[in-house]
Image 1 (cartoon, helix red, strand yellow):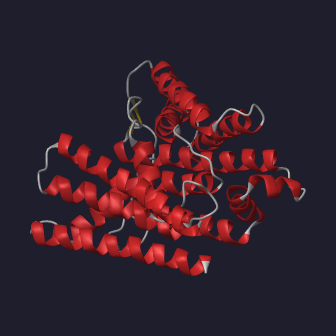
Image 2: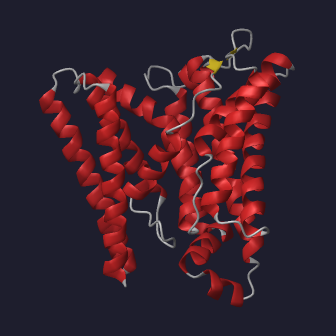
Length: 317
């Protein structure tokens, strides 16, 4: 029954995506074009990458508010590694991703061992990451002009004759891997188990603290990757960026059917949720809706997503 309900939630999210896409296609003649479709996919990459990692955290009944500013800090660290330290691409990119994993590891230790609530622990990390990004970069952008091939990670086209940026392919690849890990691996099974009933999971002999740390560290890798993708897209590390991305990523996860109470969620649903956010952002911009009203509409969507999650929770209890 739970599986059927989960499928219905995914179908509902997908139907919402179709309705929103159709609305903008009718509202603007510039929306329904191939170039704009690719633009939507491309603009969804960063939010989607953050959301994929956050799915694991939220399924485990946790939360991570540090993913936006953490991404900005990872982008700055990419500049430190490959511009300041002049490390080659093949070394600098993995180090940046691992730095994101280190941030996740710290979050996990703070939550699992120090017993600080996830909201407070990751809020503190959000502020730390925001400050460190400005301190390390001296509050100035770091440009990757001399790092050969770096921007191609995001803007290049590895498939001949196909006008799909590499960043989109990377998102699809990591989503596929994350989906397999979530459904087929020990990490995925324990993620669901901890989110469904942490006490029962601990009583069954599973070291919940260790696996919580692993979940946050794993999710942190996606923060590092998002830092690489956004800095490769911009050609620079912008230390002041990042704020607001956490809300959009969490909204994408919840819109896709993952419960904020934990124990339920899928990567497919998260991708659908990320696309809904991407279509909304793109459609509102094409219709020349003022930025302040775009924020209002997105805030209402987030509120609706959380309310829907509460309704789903009541229906299952």
